[in-house]
Each structure stands twice: as C-alpha cells, then as structure tokens.
Image (cartoon, rainbow, N blue to C red; front, side, top):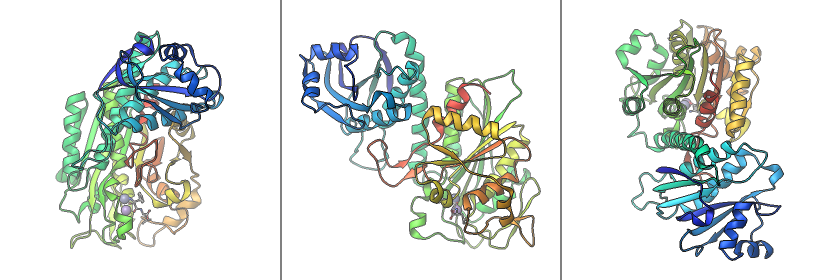
Length: 492
Ligand code: BES
Ligand code: MN
Ligand code: ZN
C-alpha cells in the first residue's frame, strides 16, 4: 500500500472513498462544513433528519458524492467529543475501513478528526494505522477473497500536510508490523514452523537492516537450552532460536531484550489437548510474531533504543521420543525443572530464552507469550496481563500501552504464589494447582531473569480471536506491537 498525505480541501480529494469522521455534538468543523457546501448541504440535511448523529459506531454511505472529488463518502461516528480517546478513534476508523474493504478499491482517503484534546500528530498516526490494518483480512487461503487491501491510502490533514507526513508514515510502518505479525499467526502450522519462521525473520532482517542470528539444534545444545529442546523433541519440525538486533542508541548502554514464545503449534504434547483446546494453537507463536513485527518497525523507524529480539521457536507434539511427565530438565541457568504437564511448555521455552537474553547483555526484559488459559479466565479475551519484578519498568510498559490504546492490566506477583511450584525431586515443577495459574506461570518465569527488570505479557486472550468484530478481523491480532513500538519511541 502506498501512503500519501494530502492538504487540499476534502471536496477536491479525488478518491474512491473518503472516510469522514463526525462527532456527536457541536457544529461541523470548518473542513467538513466546506465539504458540505460542495455537497449542497447534504450532510447538514442528514444531520437534521437524525440520520447523521455521529454516535460511536454509526456509519453512513454516500455513494454518489462528487464527480471530481471523493466519489463516495463514508461518515464514521466518533461519539461525544468530550469522551474521545485514541483507542476509541482507532476502533471507529477500523470499523469504517472494514466496511469498505469488502470490494477492491484503488484509492481510499480519510480525514483526520478535529479533536482539541488529542495531539493532532497522534490522530493522524492513528488514522494511518487503521487504514493499514483494517483492510487486510485473515482469508489467506480463500479462493474468493473477502477483503481487499487498498492500493493507495491518503490521510487528508487540512492545511498542515508537510507537518504530519512523518507521523502518517510512522502509522503506516506500525500498521505493516501489526499485519506482519497477523499474517504469521494466521498461516497454518504446516507452513509456519520453526525453520520457516526463522527464514522469514532472516529475510526481513536483511530487508530492514537488523542483525540476525539463527541458532539451530547443535548450537542450542551448546548454549545449554535443554528445556526448550525438550519441548521440541517430539516434533519432526526441529527447534530454532532467532536473535534479531537493532542498535538505535549507540551511545547508550541500555539494551532491551524482547523475548517471544514461538510455539508454532501446541498440541499439548503427551498431556494432549482436547480438540477444542487445540483448534487455534497455530497461534501459539503470537509472542514471537509480535517480537518480529516490533523489531522490523524499530529498524524502519530508527527508534532510539538498542534492542535484541529473541524468539524461541518449537513445535510441541506427542511422539515416541517426546519429553515425558516426571522428566527433570536442567535449564540454561542451572535450575532443574520437574515436568508435571507437557502442555505447560511455553514457560519451558521462555525459561531458556530469558536466561539466554540476560546472558546476551539485556539490561531490561519484556517477554510476550500466549502462556496460560488462566489469564483468559482472569482478564477475558481482549485484555493482556502484565507481571513484573520491577514497578518502574512495568509502569513504563503500562503507560505505553495506554498511549497506544491497547488494554493491559497488571497482576500481582506475591511470593506465596511460588509455593505451588515446589518439587520433591527438583528445584521446581512446571505447573502449580488450578488456582492463580497465570501468576504461577509468571512466578516460574521469574526464576530465569535474575535481577534484571522484567515485564511478562501474557497475551493468551487478545492474541487470537475466533470471530470478527466490527472493528477487528478475527484470527491473529498482532497485539502489543503498537505498545512496544510506542515504548521505544521515547528512547530507553
Ligand atoms: N498455549 C497454551 C495457553 C493458551 C490457552 C493460549 C488458550 C491461548 C489460548 C499453553 O501452552 C498451555 O497449554 N497452558 C496450560 C497450562 C497448564 C497446563 C498449567 C493451560 O493454560 O491450560
Ligand atoms: Mn501448552
Ligand atoms: Zn502453549
């Protein structure tokens, strides 16, 4: 998709569709009033008739708008001006974009809403982001496509086109990073497995100028990543670890380690999942996909941080040679783990990945993982959980999520939760009881980060959705890419 910024009056923007935001009360802003003049007052009449209320979620199609300007207009209601948020505006634009991307259109433009309380740059970025993400679907394998990416998108800014070009491009880059994560999640496990995921990472690293190392089995042995290797033992798809490197702050000693759970398929292993539990487990690499998407965006935006992205890639399968219940694994950092459930595999993968990332010199850690069903029970399907050993670092991540408009909620980390992990034969077990399962998983991970400030993001809920909503396509969501890029935009 080609992204442009236009400053001409809305009535002069020649495009197939113009997405026109409207709020619930107040006069039309100047640019909309001007457009309405060219439309001979149609918008005002729609408003008087009670059709164009501007309520959040309302859309109205005007299909014969202007011959020499926007051919069609889709108004999108944003709700009450006083209650507008970036997240709400993003959702409204996503719903609008999803409405019109069901047919192939060459050029779609969107007007930046006039909202005094929100920085205009952020608004323009949000609009560009929604234009990128909303027109890409999950129907990768349909012979009849049901969603059509736009060829060209324009953000109509009023008179300050040059001023917002950078932020619009930024929105587009972040949108592409989200779409990359979504695509990798949506591809089935016959296509995306550790080796092919790693190849894709390598290609992207070359394209965008990231350092890239791929560790294969002998190297993983050498690095003592025995917990990760145990998980992968039952699969013909052999494990890999990918390390991507971005140096955006050469004068800083800070290095962020972004670690991703990349279980390309989670059958549960010998602790086999049910059919229902397994259906969406091609998405169990959503953490690694988010790390990959984020790293490409950091490189393209030249974000002022140093970051290494470490992705632990394995397939968890039952097999004659699978790791077993009762096995005792020695993780990279020497901690011994009694395996009591082979379906609690993500934490075994991350144990080694986190310890390795600390040894590679990371000064701060964030891991992303579809780690526990318990986190979905606790927070629902749309909210990610944050778990941390360092409140200032956790606050920075929570605030970035707030600015990016992604819902993230901090969970407690009392030491008492770790009691559940005590083992009679080893340093710990890999599962606790039924209760507080998202937190005991986080307490398990904590054993592998030492004293490095760390935030664990459990994205089991929002990473993947079976069904579409007006503002979001089903399938992989690319959740937390926006948050991490936002976090990095301020520097370390
Ligand atoms: N990948 C799953 C967690 C998951 C569940 C992600 C549902 C997305 C949706 C993870 O590997 C897993 O199986 N966790 C177990 C842990 C249990 C055995 C302690 C779970 O949540 O049931
Ligand atoms: Mn599992
Ligand atoms: Zn899993």
